[in-house]
Image 1: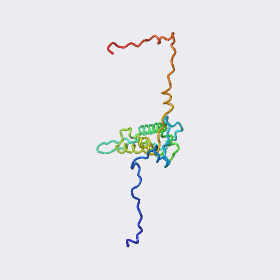
Image 2 (image 1 turned 90 degrees about the vertical axis):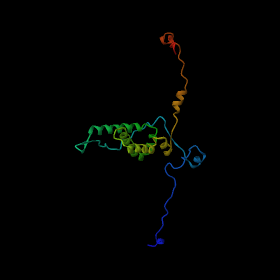
Image 3 (image 1 turned 180 degrees about the vertical axis):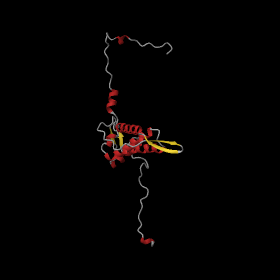
Image 4 (image 1 turned 180 degrees about the horizontal axis):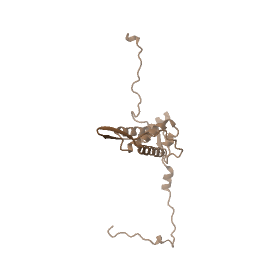
Length: 192
C-alpha cells in the first residue's frame, strides 16, 4: 500500500498530566481570572448520613503447607472480622472533612470503599508492598493526603469556632471562703 494512501493521524504529544509542573496557586491573580478556587471543607468533619458500604464481604483464607502440599481453607472468623473492620473504617472515613465533598460525588464511593478495603488489608499481616502502594494512590485520589487535597481542589477550612473558643477569656472565679481548695498553697521541693 502506498504511503500517501494511508491517512495520517495526528497523535497528541505532551500536555498536562496529573501532577506535572507546578500546581496552580489558588491565591494568585491568574487563578482568579481563570476562576480557579479551592472548595473549603469543614474542619470539624462531615456530619451527614453515611452511605451503605458498597462492597460485599470478601473471603479470607488460611493458607498452609503440609507434606509439600499447599492447602487453602476458608477462615470464616477472619472473614467476618475483616468485614467488620472495613465497616468501621468506612464509618470513620465518612466523618472526615473530605466526606463533605464525597457526599456530593457519589461516583467516588466505590473508590472510597476500595480505599477502605485496602486499608484493612494493610493493617493485617497479609499486606504486600503493592497493597501499601495502592493505599497511597487511593489516598491521593480521594483527597486524604495533602497532595490529594490540592489535586481535588479542596482545602480544609480553619476551625474558626475552636480558635475563638481558645481566645475567649477564662471567667474569673470568685473566692469562696467555704471552699477548702482556696486555702491550699503550692509547695516546691527544696531541690527544684
